[in-house]
Length: 298
Image 1 (cartoon, rainbow, N blue to C red):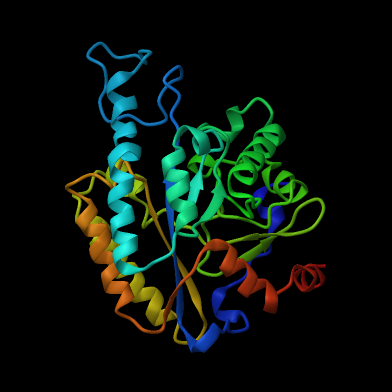
Image 2 (spheres, rainbow, N blue to C red):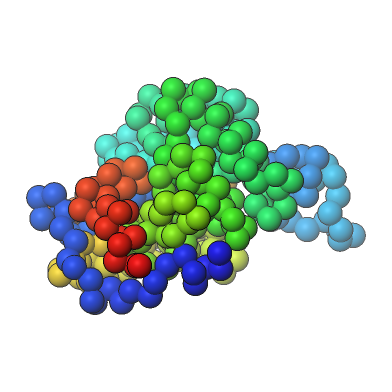
C-alpha cells in the first residue's frame, strides 16, 4: 500500500478526547537508540570526512566516533535515568544484543522495554530479505530477554511499501516510523491494523546535532518548548511526546547535561506520565481497539 492508503485523514481537533489515568495530560516516552555499526560497510553517518574523499574501509574515525557512545555515553544516560527514576525504551539492532551485552543486561535490570530496530543499522530498502531481517531481530530480543518485542522502529525510520504488513504478520503490535501525530493512530495492513505510536524528528538528537548542527543546549531548549506546547494542547485531550537520544550524540560530555535538564523540567509537572511504548499501546487499545477502527474506516 501507498502511505496514503494506510490511514484516513483525521484532524486532531475533531476526535473524541483521550483520557489518561488520574487525569494526567501528557505521556512522555524516552527512546534510547543502541546500534551496531559494521566496520566492513559504509558508516551510517559520519562526523569526519577523509582527506581525499570517498568511503574508506575500515573507516576508523567514524566507527570509533559511534563506538564511544556504547562504551561511555550510554552509561552517562544510565546515571540520569537512575537519578530521576525514569523508565526508557531501548530501540536496539538485533545484532547489538550480544555485541553490547553489558548494555542489554543493564536495560533488563531496569525493566526497560526492548524495541526492534532492524537486525543491523541499515536502510530497510537495502536489506536483502526484509521479512528475514524482522524475524532475526525479533528472535534476538526474545532469546536474550525472554520476551518478544512488541514495538518496531526502522533504522533511520526507513520502511518499504510492505513493512507494516510484515510487522503485523511477524507479531509486532506497534510501529514508530510514522511521525505525523501527537496521538496514536491505526495503520491499515493487508491483514489487521497496526498501531503507530508517536515518535519524533524534532526532539531527536540526530536531526538537531548531526543534520541541523545546533549547539548542545538546543536539545534542552527545544524539548522544553515542545513539551510546554504539547502540555497546553493536552488541556482538552491527552497527548504523547517522545524524546529520542543516541549514546554517541547526546551521551558525549558537552551535551549530556542538556538532556538531563530537559527531563528535570518535564518531571516537575505532576500530571505527566513517563511510560514505554508498550504501555502506551495497552492504554490506547483498551479504549480504541483495532476492530472499532476498522469498522469506522469501512
